[in-house]
Amino acid sequence: MVSVSGFLSVCKPVGVSSFYVVRQIRRLTNVAKVGHAGTLDPFASGVLILGISRAFTRQITYFQALPKTYWVRVVFGIETDTLDSDGQVTACQDAASLTEEQVRQALQSFEGEYEQMPPQFSAKKKSGRKAYELARRGEKVSLSAVNVTIHDTEFCHFKSGQYPVLECRVSCSKGTYIRSLAQDIARKCGTVAYVQDLCRVMIGDVALSDSVMMEALSMETIQGAVFDGT
Image (cartoon, rainbow, N blue to C red; front, side, top):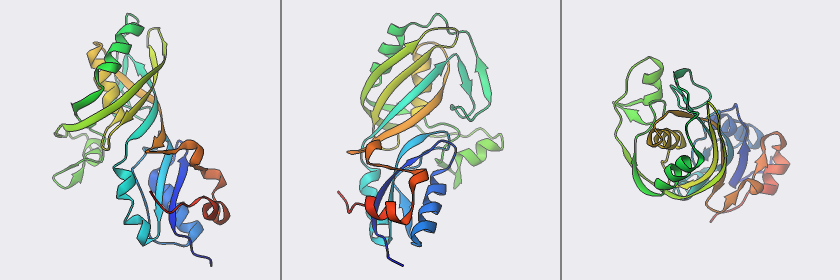
């Protein structure tokens, strides 16, 4: 079998884990050493960069450190335990009084560095256990705030109503949780929120247009799409 080695950008669809994509690449290429440059939750879609072969998994930290850009849809007035659309509703309040200007100002106010609290349902570790494992058992997890950077935000659309909706783009540093950012924006506006949809549209200069669709993955498409670095 012809060997494959290099970096590959895949457009991960909604509903599958990042590790599922890794397993598919392993199966199609028969290469055991495959890793990715940053997890996308199952409810999220978009750019997932993978390193194929030991030489490239060792270099994957380069992409992990690059800024990431997301398109996000936030629903105000409703909160879930996971802060996304996969969770159980934990709070519901009429947010009809929320205005577009309030949301614009709140979004923009987070540009720059700020201390962000990771979600309870996250891969952050506490006493050697992942926070989401403890949260699933109903345990309250005490996590430490993390310094993150919001490089840029772009206000795209706002729909008013009982549960207003914001659509925006966010460019941010490694380790930023968009779910937490949405919660922080909502709190600044005096309400709650969850992330309904999330798509990672770029990692560094690697965009969705550079990515192979999951359903199109084959040995041939992988060979044609791998690249050798920075």
